[in-house]
Image 1 (cartoon, rainbow, N blue to C red):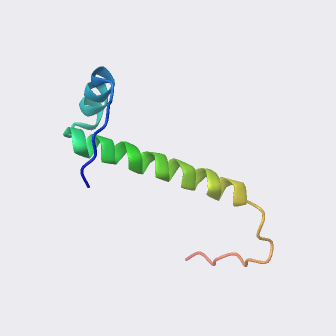
Image 2 (spheres, rainbow, N blue to C red):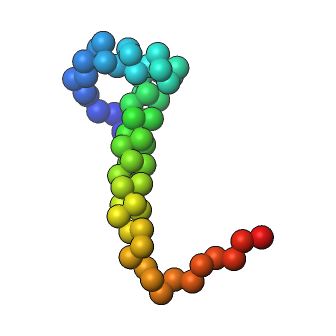
Length: 59
Protein backbone atom coordinates (compact mmCIF):
# COMPACT_ATOMS: atom_id res chain seq x y z
CA UNK A 1 0.00 0.00 0.00
CA UNK A 2 1.39 3.38 -0.92
CA UNK A 3 1.16 6.10 1.71
CA UNK A 4 2.64 9.56 1.92
CA UNK A 5 4.36 10.22 5.25
CA UNK A 6 6.04 13.33 6.63
CA UNK A 7 9.00 11.85 8.55
CA UNK A 8 11.96 13.73 10.00
CA UNK A 9 14.72 13.01 7.45
CA UNK A 10 17.49 12.91 10.09
CA UNK A 11 15.51 10.43 12.18
CA UNK A 12 14.88 8.20 9.17
CA UNK A 13 18.54 8.36 8.07
CA UNK A 14 19.70 7.43 11.59
CA UNK A 15 17.32 4.47 11.66
CA UNK A 16 18.43 3.36 8.18
CA UNK A 17 22.07 3.32 9.33
CA UNK A 18 21.17 1.12 12.29
CA UNK A 19 19.09 -1.46 10.39
CA UNK A 20 21.08 -1.14 7.14
CA UNK A 21 17.94 -1.22 5.01
CA UNK A 22 16.12 1.06 2.58
CA UNK A 23 13.39 3.50 3.65
CA UNK A 24 10.47 1.12 3.19
CA UNK A 25 12.17 -1.78 4.95
CA UNK A 26 13.27 0.52 7.79
CA UNK A 27 9.72 1.73 8.39
CA UNK A 28 8.35 -1.83 8.16
CA UNK A 29 10.98 -2.98 10.68
CA UNK A 30 10.02 -0.15 13.04
CA UNK A 31 6.32 -1.01 12.78
CA UNK A 32 7.01 -4.69 13.43
CA UNK A 33 9.10 -3.77 16.49
CA UNK A 34 6.21 -1.70 17.87
CA UNK A 35 3.83 -4.63 17.39
CA UNK A 36 6.28 -7.10 18.97
CA UNK A 37 6.86 -4.77 21.93
CA UNK A 38 3.13 -4.52 22.64
CA UNK A 39 2.74 -8.31 22.37
CA UNK A 40 5.58 -8.77 24.89
CA UNK A 41 3.90 -6.33 27.29
CA UNK A 42 0.61 -8.21 26.97
CA UNK A 43 2.32 -11.53 27.55
CA UNK A 44 4.18 -10.17 30.59
CA UNK A 45 0.90 -9.05 32.18
CA UNK A 46 -0.44 -12.60 31.86
CA UNK A 47 2.41 -14.07 33.92
CA UNK A 48 0.96 -16.02 36.83
CA UNK A 49 -2.70 -15.49 35.88
CA UNK A 50 -3.35 -18.98 34.51
CA UNK A 51 -3.06 -21.30 37.51
CA UNK A 52 -4.98 -24.14 35.83
CA UNK A 53 -2.44 -24.62 33.04
CA UNK A 54 -0.19 -27.61 33.64
CA UNK A 55 3.53 -27.20 33.30
CA UNK A 56 4.92 -28.49 30.00
CA UNK A 57 7.32 -31.40 30.58
CA UNK A 58 10.86 -30.72 29.47
CA UNK A 59 12.99 -33.19 27.59
